[in-house]
Length: 179
Image (cartoon, rainbow, N blue to C red):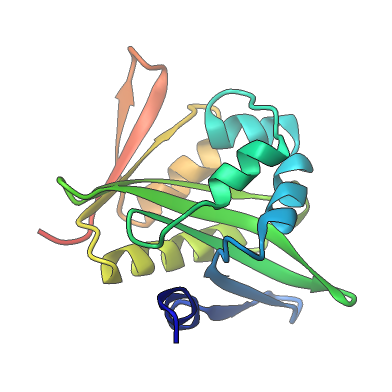
């Protein structure tokens, strides 16, 4: 079995929504998921795009191909997938980028507007933290817009320490995974 298939299988899990629908959380498959990832990011509202990137970023296929170019060790992306009739679509994306020297990884997450308030973001974030820990990440951190109060509250509830960085105009959050 290839390393990619092994990692995808190892970290795939299912989350059941309150209405009974199933959401699959799994690592992104770089060769297979580019089109779904493009559809996901190109259909985000401007606000969600801003919250994800801390500035509005126009989504192009070339950029999405770069985002899909992960290696599972230095960069990891996990997606939330739902079945829509016969098709499958991405409804959330969580990823981290590891600095191998320090063991610290910057994390980011975004849930599509149509799938907010269903527990997907919190549970995908918890799953991403579990994956990061199992992959040897020592600390995860994120920078968040002060307007994104919901993720700040979720981060605090999950144990992130938060700090305001006035020079950046952003909050920073940090979670120690191992010493």
